[in-house]
Amino acid sequence: PRRPFSGTFLYMKCRTLAAVIAILFMFAVSGTAGKKPVSLNVTLDTSCTSCAYGVGIAYSGSGYPVNTPIFIGVQGPIQVNISTTSDGAGNFYVNYGGAIVYPNGNYTATASDIVHKTVVLLASTTFTVQ
Image 1 (cartoon, rainbow, N blue to C red):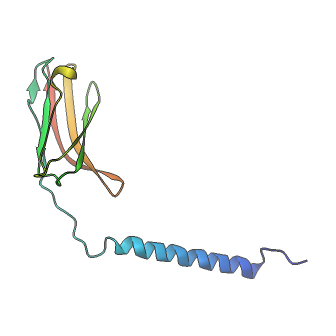
Image 2: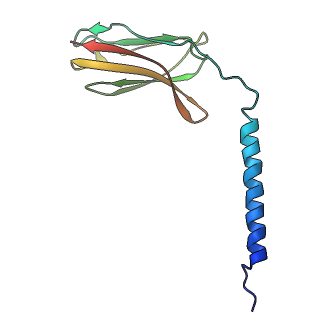
Image 3: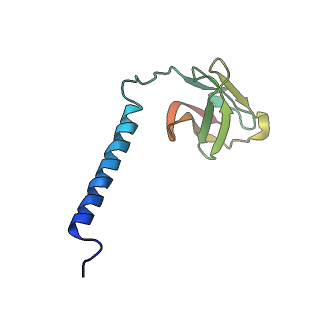
């Protein structure tokens, strides 16, 4: 009796799979071929660098792509994630007032964007709460 997955059949399936992978790779590469990476001169600022306990901290930035979601991550004694969108000039401003109470300590704030499903760090800054 002949086996359904004989050498010739398996060989043809492997060649077909290799051709499909090659075609997908060409489409993926052609989407970025010849395009220069965008160079941004972005900023991320806080309303204070040496902040008093209990005072609200505002975040602002400029130079971002227009109308783009911006994700601000704050790392320190507590972690805070803030989402905002740049305006038509590529700027943003976020101020929750005293709604977020930061304990004393050192913090790093980062502004990120998502490009092709990848998080891209755009800017960072540090501040201290005392």
